[in-house]
Length: 465
Image (cartoon, rainbow, N blue to C red; front, side):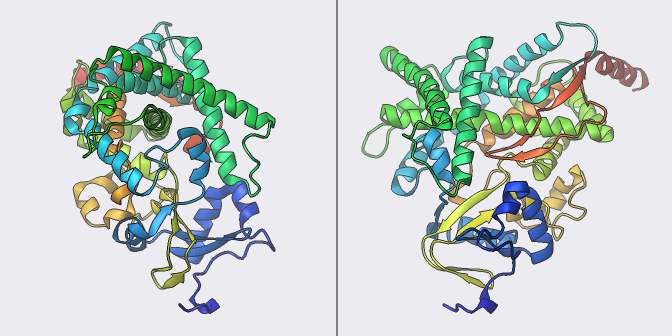
């Protein structure tokens, strides 16, 4: 394989010894955006002693995630998630991953998802009941509210228990999840990784958080084993699943898959919806079109599963929101053997970064990339660009198993909330994305919620229709 510097991809020089690491610590999103703009769609960065290829070319993305996927594993960055998720679908590899994926897949079949729609709407109605308990507008942290809501939904759909029903329990579990994911992210970013058994304050907090989460999950698994009942939830489906040898999952395997679904399944949807309400607040013309579609398709009743397929403009809006603010903002892979990324040879062990945050801002496929335009996701616009130019849920063998669940949930929650409440950013407040495990708003999402405005707008709409 050629090794001359001429064959290397271009990229920022960085600083001696550390390369682009200080820039990544300061603002990794800004670093990646600058790298795409100044060095092209396949660029080489150095982070300390490590080489890192940032890929924003859809054809090269397809090569890594689809065509030559067998040559790539999850990168070392996933070791942090492995500490809290265990060996679940997000973090496992090889034959074990294939077995687990096959066992879990039926639980996410379309017919199964339909049975969860009413649960999602009901949980949202309960949140709106709290919102409407006080007259007039008020300010709430919408990110925190959505996190609590989606935690409730994942609990009810996963094992028939509302994790958000009791404020104390919801706060404890929510804090344990926050600590666990923060620790996983810090572990991934650390050049020097201290052993987990070392009783540092961070390790102690993390161990306490995992103990809280494990106690909850194992308690639920044990109770279900005792009753041996089929409750129709995801846990029951996972427990009933059998491989070709008629073997099911052990309690530890169930724990890891359940933990993966709890951690990944609620935060991503909450983050996506938070950014959606942000963008709708900033673009009232788009918000009015979404409201009009919801009024035409659903009217005054509660949304149902079959409505999801009949809300094309709402789907376009959600897709555009996840283009600008993809909840999972980067996927990383490590090359098992040597390969080529377009014109550039890479050795085994090279880390590949595919960042939807910058991939979705490639001006070759998304003109005016920072602009908000749901028409980018019309059928004609989608057909005109490569499938791998837009990857909120990845693609290929490791595509997110819960993508259908997440899309349905986001649509139903938006369709339940938007007709009843106006959510407005506070004057002068601009949410800032924080690139950790997910793309959370750094300081939460304080917004004014006002039921009256929507009711007045609806009355005006009916009067002029």
